[in-house]
Image 1: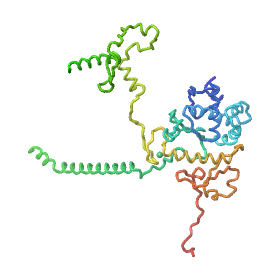
Image 2: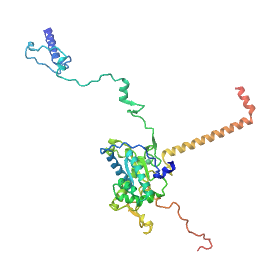
Image 3: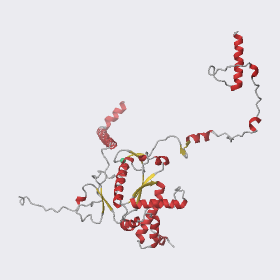
Image 4: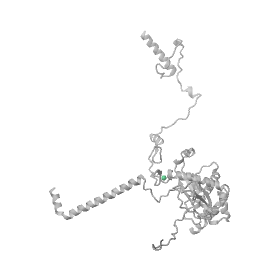
Length: 206
Length: 195
Ligand SMILES: [Zn+2]
């Protein structure tokens, strides 16, 4: 079987999924681990933006991507896809959302369905549980959500920031000096070309 | 008389050392009053290791000396793996929008805090509106005075969630708007035709 046929067997994801499982501690063993992951996947599809610890979010992201791409590929008449959706989505109203809302949204979407950011650690230092564990938090979201964008609009840089003002002034000064030195050099060269003999005489007398 | 006092004090010091060991209390801290003559003092038992080996036990003790390198590594960590001492953070950057410092690769704390608060507000509103109904259409979030911008037919079939406050300045609305506005339908008018 060549590579072209293999790609037809399963849907191609637009995010890189790590081949190894993450180390998620769970008292329920591997079964409890899957239950926890399915809770995360359900919450992601339901709320469209959640905050989880990085490793758990990273693994749940792959499952969510796979679920959405399978739903787009096979539709809701396909039995294995429906079983998968039933397993991964614990809130059954979200199955409805998967086929009615998310499939049309991501059908002709450029790029992946989910997006992930590293959340700053210090913002909830008042939360003692987080402080105790000090794990890396992350923000996991579906694209096309109704919330305000996580990344600020960087198309227009703030020119009034003190750093930018100082840098601009420094840049101006540098160019002025450069121009000045160049014009001085030109004047010197002109003198040299006009009176070459006199200059030589001067150096000799010195 | 003086010599006699000196002798008595020497005897007392000797007695103290028998009772409290080689290093007695500092002078003046504890006075010892002797009632009986010195004949009643018990003679000390000779020390032998059998006293505490026979019916006692010893805890485990380190067998070998820990080298200085290992001690230092345990104290300060090693640069090869993990330093336990304080060190400078070389990843700090300045945010373009707010001017605060943030670690590169991680969201800016100041900017993200705003977004998080607004997100939780919207999330609560959506969940209150949705309750247990099945989700079958996308949510449109509208702020104060934005519903009147379009006719009622425009909003038909959309799940609208209205926030009872004006739109924040940093949350731009252009996701709803078209990027290219239609050309204005105006005609050129010559100055003679005016009036
Ligand atoms: Zn910022």
